[in-house]
Image 1: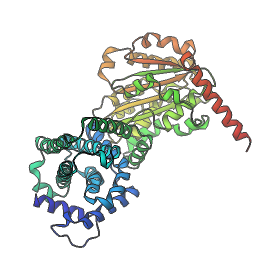
Image 2: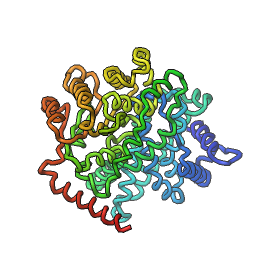
Image 3: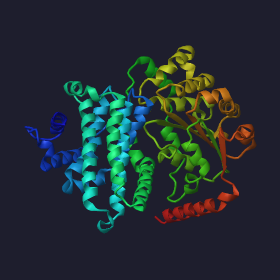
Image 4: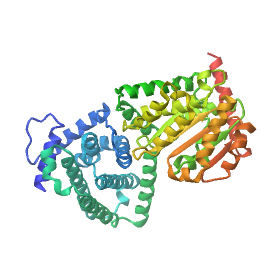
Length: 494
């Protein structure tokens, strides 16, 4: 494919300081090494930023997977750049693609799925390489020739994507690969060679490499460090609201929720809360594809608000930053701004709008604002309706709301909040229509909190209940209390 190679080389040259480009530069080890070094430098400077504004849920999900792969693969590229620059280029392609995806209007789902499939294949061979020594590998020549073919096909796929997403002239030249079937066909070529490579392996080696690859892919998706990295990138590209009505709505809904969360709730002591993070009921709730309510009841001083802060700060309520939005509210008795249902819902909506990567969700609040005006932030019924309306938007992913300590809410306001939650999670029609709204509620184990939820908790596919005082958790919680006491004793010595 000389024309494809030429166009791809031209695009790569834009990333380097080379004044001229020769047709055969893509075959040059030195040229490719310089390109990869430039991409590495950009990655270290975080110049590979991307925006998800106006993107569909599926596109956002796929782009986030690519970004996670990019963050994880840094170490692989650094090791490969001197020995195998062309292999390093295959691992670095996402650095080139993400900026193009930010501006392109032609992100074909099949094209993105092909990229994800290729990433999985690359992880498999990385795990195989790491788990086998030279003297346990199969006949070198047969496998080596096939692996060279595999990476050549991977580079070709990347080149097609880059040329398709690049400037208009290149895009016109490669319009013939723009359709979904064509992208699927190109990805299948890579998969076919991958399977041929696997046939050269001993069955046990192949199974072990696949097991390691599956574990590594799961770790990439779950990594707290990678999630934080992606979250920070998305944070920098959020929409700025300039429309007068939109600014007025945000002013109405504003609450300093970050200060409220941190003012009285310390960070967790290292080693604490781990029993909860590993609890199957929490994991099932977090990973569920449907709307779910999780109720956590604990006595005073047991650390439930510390847990709530950790869940938010450490981004443990979701494994995706691109397709989920976490909102939270901490009730506090004695603070009039933190004791009403309306205040909680207003804060949740403010966070939902300011984190919206599409920038269009706030439009769904304009009708309610025209109806209520400056009283919008005091109208729980309207606010709840807006929240449900937002979650029904096709561009919205998972919406996760953490509400801490409703036992400190005014009694009448607490009843309103509980009735709203019961009305949604207990209504089969509403529940079936909205599958992406999750609530996690932490409270003291008072009858006035637990009793209204009993009928709802019987619907296991709708909700779950985790009591801190459960006998199966006593030992774990006792150990964590000891950790906190020891930490305070150490701090008191300074």
